[in-house]
Length: 148
Image (cartoon, rainbow, N blue to C red):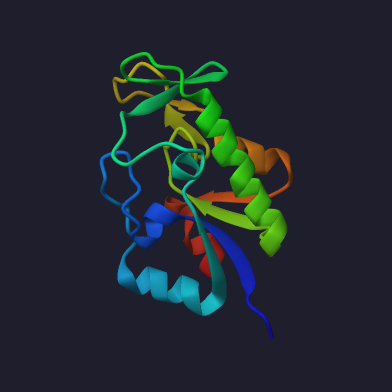
């Protein structure tokens, strides 16, 4: 029987695509459990959309995504969200495990656009696009939902 496919933020798998050039790798035992249950489909919407690594931190401000220096980076974030959606379509992913608080992958709560570390109730660009299209989006603090 074929495993269900799960879209996952590449940084959670250890890919060095975080804006700092690092990763957000999940603990090895958690990754092992995910791999036992799912066929993992990695994506970094930010790099897929054309942003480099490392890159300036960015946050959502209204309908735009803006870098700390004030540069509008909305277009690459939207491109990355579309690529994430295309991967879900191509591989039949009905669920996505995404990096919390990210301006692209954040689900439920993201930074408020002030670059002060304050959070607001909102999704990142990719999480929003996937949710609107019926993909169940889960943040890494809710992994247990995927493993029960």
